[in-house]
Picture 1 (cartoon, helix red, strand yellow):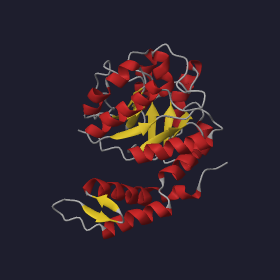
Picture 2 (cartoon, rainbow, N blue to C red):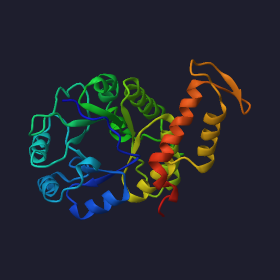
Picture 3 (tube, rainbow, N blue to C red):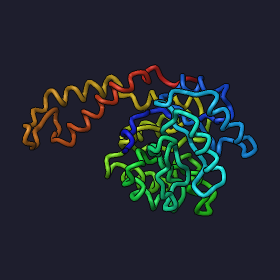
Picture 4 (cartoon, helix red, strand yellow):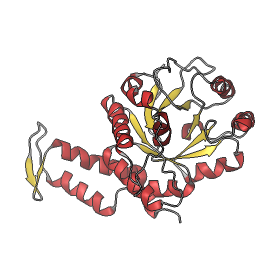
Length: 287
């Protein structure tokens, strides 16, 4: 059995699994919740987090559970806890060639896996991970990546990503896109930098990412607003599709002072698709 394609997004909000008091709020503020059993939870609190996972369920269709990495004692304990739940999608951190799988649910079906490529080995393994039938999306992370390289910072002093992080981001996006799967952009760790969150989310949407991970409800609101096209962008896309007149067999025409062919029409269709799916984000970020 092959999992269904990943369509959750654009704002995926992390919530520590040992904070069940935050579960409902997270679900209300974002398009999807990532209940975290890994880095967001003190190791001493992970047993309590697993209990909360079972005792305070969220909608499985809008929830991802980040388990601990393959090869760790916590990984097996996480899967055992999940067996008593209705969750079907997991995020696998530090995914790389050690991920042999598949990871099976209690009914024998494979979990849908969001493979988090956040180490040097993981980024290099992204194309192979994307080819796996149980992997429904690829995500990436800058901080663990730089740590795996022995570095000290993923960003320059002006807040922009260093080249190695930009390369990893592009590699993961291309690996996912090459096989028609979703790509999920990394979190922005500066809690007060809503302008930075917005800029990166707009770029992510323009490049083809399906969603962006968030670490704060205000970030989720900013991401939703950034993924939703503006009224002007929607009007331009509609005008292009209405007036281009490109024949079904292909070719290029002049429209509105531009050369228009099928790739540009696909851009316009993507804008209208985002508008249909993300209109809720137009209200703008919470401050």
